[in-house]
Length: 150
Image 1: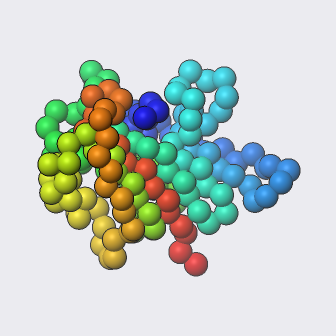
Image 2 (image 1 turned 135 degrees about the vertical axis):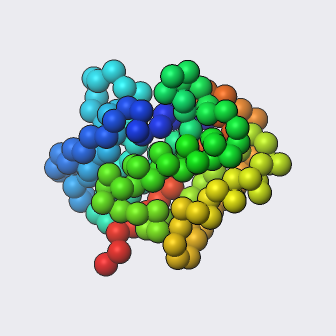
């Protein structure tokens, strides 16, 4: 897994440079611009009506490690995803696909109990994938794709 950090820890920026080919892109997150000191990726990229959300983990800003407790960590990671999506003018209900990476598949029900509270309508398509390790000692990493309603 590549290093992913919580969007609210590094701040949100929105830039929209015009590209010569294809629709304009808007980059969300402090890592959006090359040359700055944030991790070298954007929290999300909006291309047309589609938002590609990078993997997020639930990090404690004081320790830079995963939030203690699976329930609290699930809230932290989903709050980070929600913050990124809202910075792009969307909501969690605009997600159409979500991928969850988890270091302990026994936490499936714990994660689901928290996850349900972030949606008001139908749930997006989702994969829940077991992995050996995640950055910063995290149990969960969440990435997704959202589309703007027409």
